[in-house]
Length: 232
Image (cartoon, rainbow, N blue to C red; front, side, top):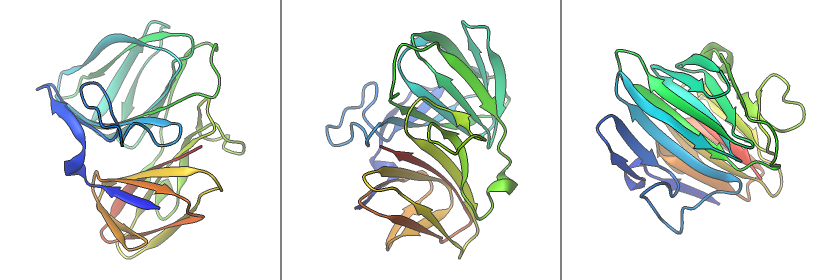
């Protein structure tokens, strides 16, 4: 099953400082057909205006992955963690028993992010935060694991769930395969470009929900940057 969800069909709202688009039900957007995809609960496509951002607010029992598409995001939390994550790089916050954090765009340009929430496999653990650079050159023509709770992904940022977040850049005309395990689901979004999967076309910021597929074969119709969540 491959279901393309065009960007224009997403929910969301423009708050001035934040232009938010929701692949799944979130905040004031509710669609019973788009509540989650396996353990993937949230995929928000956010554009944050310069010198603005999310003020301190709490979370618990959620794995929150932020993929920075352009600009940079600056993180602060009540554990004393702080850091600036730039375009192409990733930060992970395991909310655990509870954490309060703020995410600001302190840049002079808009910052664009994918914010991905995945349900954890276990609760009651201490909260944590981490960030890591992932040079786009390393992802040319191949998937690189950015965050993972699966065995064998030691180089990725750790998350407390049996899921994996991967990214790749694909040149126009090239094809890239991703092996999806039995009983698992994938959700894929091209950050840029346009791709084809089994005859279905997805353009920048469209969502693609995938299930009951052993191998996902992606052909780039244009130079493309893709992000994929592999979840139970």
